[in-house]
Length: 262
Image 1 (cartoon, rainbow, N blue to C red):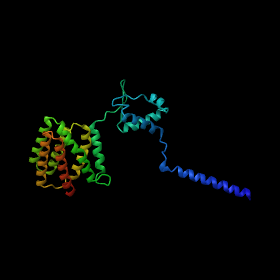
Image 2: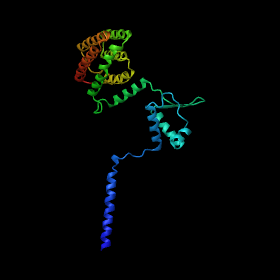
Image 3: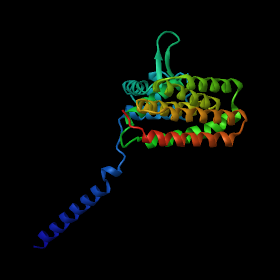
Image 4: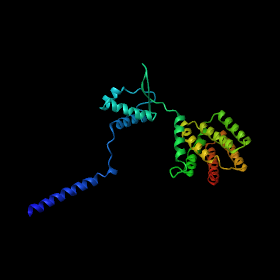
């Protein structure tokens, strides 16, 4: 009897311990072990992103990488395939060949962002309001920088675009010239990264809104706003240029929200 009760007590204790241990290892709170090739790829990716491996740098050979990471060559080869699929590295053949860290072009980044934003726009992930808000956060300070950093040719290009805007008929062409104007302002800011982030947002907005109807009065107001921005940039009035751009984008936001999207 005593032995039976003791056995029940011990068994119950073991079951309780196992249950508590499993609860403490909730899958949602545990970092799962990743495949070896993924761990190698992640570490190489981190070295690329933190600048330890720069654009154009040659990676060690597969044999050397296998020795460095303590894995097989097949694991290294799979890790390199992962990085190549993300355009982080590329391989060339021949006596001067090897595996190198890619030099990413601004245009490629911009195109990738545009595609991604386009797929996400119109959903709960990225709404029209999100796009308009992001545009303001980017373009208002860009206008202020343009006032401080622009060159004479930027002013001339802005004026030419505004003149073309006035003469252009058809909303598709109007939107294109409108985009060109804002692109020149961003270029005049002298920060390529702002352009990489701004251009995809504008393109997705254009794709969503170009089919909407905008009356002649709207476009006249756009032209006037653009001229005001040019004046503030020409005068190197950073605060004034930012304020003029902010007012302009606020008007556009109202118009865009009120415009049916075809």
